[in-house]
Length: 205
Image 1 (cartoon, rainbow, N blue to C red):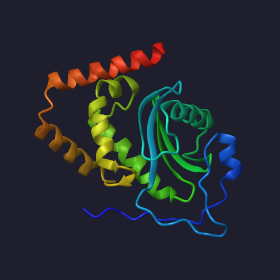
Image 2: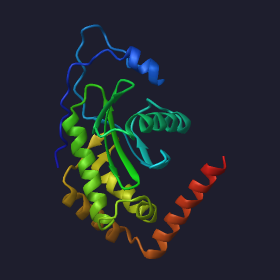
Image 3: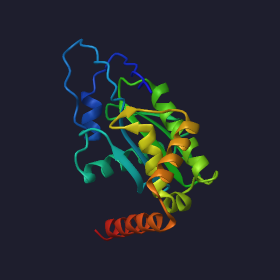
């Protein structure tokens, strides 16, 4: 399958906004347009309604440490959790997001990314999870199906490149990988137990 090209727009100045958000600005020459790139997605993360991380993947080194990532996520949550908008511009980045019961889903791109492409990824992620979780896109069911959620995300984005935006194709591929990989109930339980232990340790730190 051919990978879609990113649709770049002129790159606005990011210095002031990035400095306010604690985000390192990307150096560009004056008047120089952004280079077209397949690497459209900087990050995808899902938070609960208290702004705590449930699932996250970062695809570049804008936030090299987990601590920096979680500070960024908290700042984004504080900016977006009380608004009805679906798009935010924060720290020199474009962020599209969607809430569902007690979850907030975010897709992050650079400031020159096309919002429609980012929204297509967000919609695909939500619809794929909606199908996998049988229309129960909420914290309890996400935590109980975290392995499937990571498989879904990996079918949509790989290394920052958008691979798929059709939820039906994503679900078919996830089901194929699960069958081919022999994801038995026991192995799923082991993955879930490991995830719960990681969450417990992160809360104790």
